Image 1 (cartoon, rainbow, N blue to C red):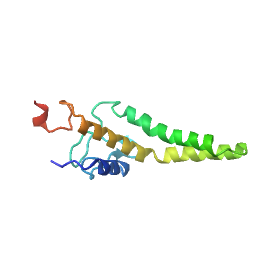
Image 2 (image 1 turned 45 degrees about the horizontal axis):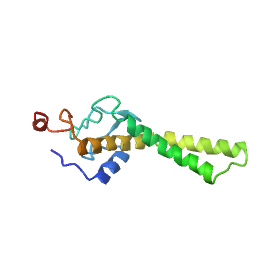
Image 3 (image 1 turned 60 degrees about the vertical axis):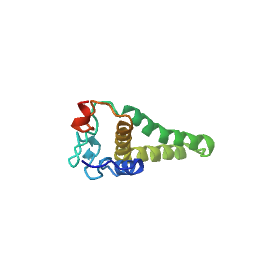
Image 4 (image 1 turned 180 degrees about the horizontal axis):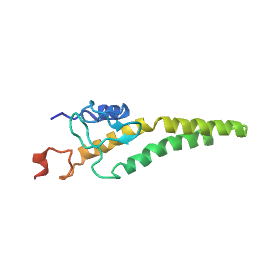
Length: 131
């Protein structure tokens, strides 16, 4: 059985779209379709549909909050063209970083499952689930 990495290593593995547990298996099939499990260590990435919903909200809202703060505290578009360019650039960055943010979301879900395990979690060894 593969020993889990530290929290930072798991997050880095997720950012690079690799399994947060072993760092070897890919998280995604294609651009943003989550695999069922890691082909290397067998970690089930999402044991139930919607498990990562809260992390997705956080992962989307933090960049949005930063963009709002930039506009509110410093960047004042002088024209509609500057405002449109800022919105276009923000949308482009949000779309381009979907796979990395999805990897971090799955790594955060893995870490919460590691810190607060549930007996029926397929991440745990079979002997631990039978207790």
